[in-house]
Image 1 (spheres, one colour):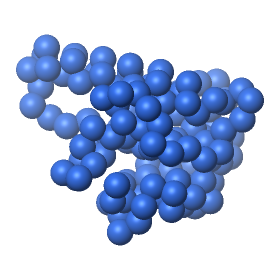
Image 2: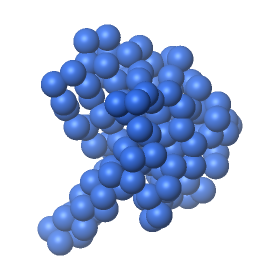
Image 3: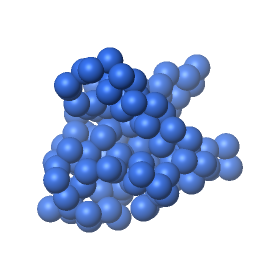
Image 4: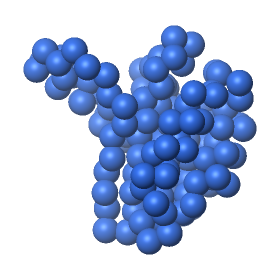
Length: 124
């Protein structure tokens, strides 16, 4: 099992094109940890904003009566991918991993695969 700091380091170094990563509590919108980012990519702002995205999707699924689980949410920008992976283990419920990627330098399929692996090893 790995902790938050190690998980974020693995995301930033092990996923090609990673620009920033965060572990976020979507009940509060607080980032429990961040790594990377830039002046243009404030990870605390991204954590709070993406919390609204997750909450909206969870509410929509409830209103539709969908009895399924969200694996991840992808937001595609002109030059970036923003990937939100909801954590499913019982110790980690209510949390998500957020990863911003440079679209030109990343492989989205591999990034999703690596983020899933990191999720499986993470213990908060």
